[in-house]
Length: 63
Image (cartoon, rainbow, N blue to C red; front, side, top):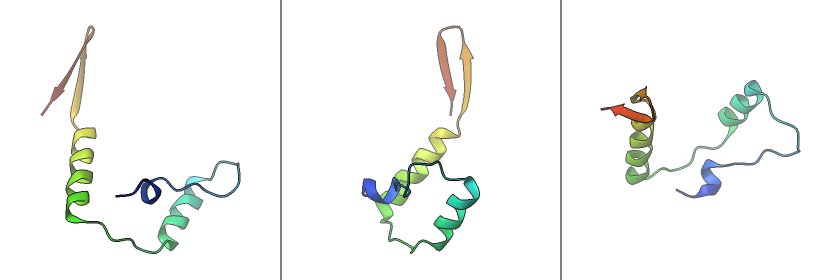
């Protein structure tokens, strides 16, 4: 997956509201995602949702 497909700069220097960003994404043309890219994205999502526990200076990720 190209970086351009995941990181799209919005025109102008002002921040875009969440509602405007959602509307822009809904109006955007669909793009093809390979099976490998899909598996990578699923893995990234699953990793980011793992329960995290902090203990002193240690971080424990429960799988």
